[in-house]
Image (tube, rainbow, N blue to C red; front, side, top):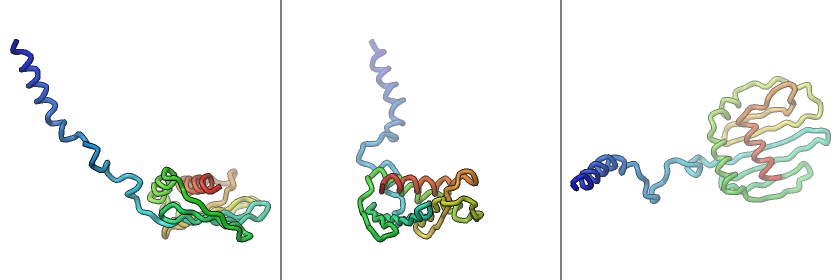
Length: 150
């Protein structure tokens, strides 16, 4: 019955190199959303038939303030998941690329205009679907902030 010890030895020899790959749970998983740079984000939505002008400012810690055109202010805190997603989007290299694109004037009447400031990067677009598709990363941030801040 020598096969059992030989099989155990063979199995140990095969699994030993993999032991270095195992995580104990005490080590960080690598750079995750919390490791991304935290920057202030400011979104201004203006236009529309009623002449809307809302500004949402999100602090690096996820606290936000929303001020409408009459000066009425509301505030809150992003959920951990929304803050992680915002940090991912803020670090997205597409934002910098979208900031360099020249947007042609729109022919839409009463369309909403969005201006987004993420750190030192400013992007914008006019929500006029027949004319152009909004820039993807900028639009993702606008959607996130619009949903999260009501």
